[in-house]
Every structure is written in structure tokens, then in C-alpha cells.
Length: 282
Image (cartoon, rainbow, N blue to C red):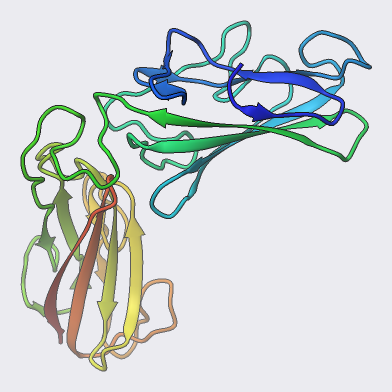
């Protein structure tokens, strides 16, 4: 087994497929794919995997950046597998280009992680935990703050994110807005591709009114990046009457005057860039 922990009258260990794991520095390292399996049982209830166990929970946390909790899963039946399966084989999370942690949609990086696995014995409020530190090191992925082109496929300076305003009004980039606003942004990471959305995690759209206060915001996680939803393929148009309409989903009245549109683009690797422009609502 790998990792450590346990006790509390339970027997168990963490396992991983040796075909997926290499261990160059005493720490399990996943290159092409990964899963963790928890074998655990209560010897007082039996000696088969799962005997005397109500359920098992898996938690994975980053050991870099903001130390985010990136993944969790509850398994009610053996085999207890981090990504499901187990009848009889655990599902493998393939470390392909652009792979993300299931459910949370957080990008996976070539970095260190910690998995905590918690067993809940039947008929007891007590729990027993195991943990293992592991590393992801895939040729398809990049490091969190990689200064190269990522993916382990070469050096060179990392290219800046590309972001620009595709529309302010419907089908145009006009400064003067009369009754209809779109606010669409195109964004991509040239190191990942040149199509809208390549290598991009999200775009935050913000609008600031004539007095400088924020009147509206929306975060878009998928292309096309539209301030008022839509984008499959056309952005929704926000139609309004000055002095008589509120900004969508708010109690902020639409006023005439100069407004600042700001878009903050966040890439899959955590980098950000911000673009701004002004429009005049008439």
C-alpha cells in the first residue's frame, strides 16, 4: 500500500495500479492516468473488503497556490475507488491535455497533491482516515506557474493571453449604445490554441456606471463569453429603456452616461488578464 494513517480498529491500506505509478523520490507519481483504491474492513465484522464499513469518502487537495479542495467523492460499496467503478476495476482518470478534476471542473496541473480517505464504520459515529501525498507529472499538462510553454514539451517564453471585445452593441463595437447592449469578449491562450476559449477557465464581465459604482457582473465559464448569457452560438442581447429598466438580475437602474466595461480573463493555468473599454448609454 501507499500513504499512511488508519487505526481505530479497522484494517486497510491505499492502493494504486503499479502500471500507472512511478516512485522516483519516495512519493507516488502519476504520469498517464490515476486512481486510488481504499481497501478497508473491520476485522470484528469480517475479513473481506468493505466488511463493517458503511461508506468511504475521498478528498483531494492542492499542495500549491491557494491549497484548494479540488475533488471529493463518496463510495458506498466496495471496491472503494476514487473515481468510481470497482466492478471489478476502478475507473482511471486519464491525464490528457486539458483534463480537469471531475465535478469541480478545476484544472489538473503537474504539481503535488494530498488525498485524504475517510472510512465510516457501520454503527459508529467515529471515522478513521488515511492519507497519501502524490505528484502529477504528465507530458500533457503544465505546472501551475510554468514559465515555459507547458506540457513538458519545450521551453521558451510563455505567450500572453489574448483577449478583446467582439461586440458592445448587437453586431457592432460601437461606443454609443442606444437601447441594446451585448458585451461579448473573445479570449484564448495561444499556448493552448487560437480558438475562442482555448485554455481559458472563465471570463468575469463587470459594468460600472457613470458614478463609478458597479452596476452588473456575470462570470462565464464557457464560450462564447457573453455578459448576458447565451453564446450557443449567439449572445443574448440586453434590451433596456434608460431610466425605466434595471440591469439584469439587479435593482440597479440603467442610467444615461458613460459606462466602463471590464473583462477579467482567467486561464486554466491560473494566469489572468484584464481589458476595459467605455461606452456611452444614450
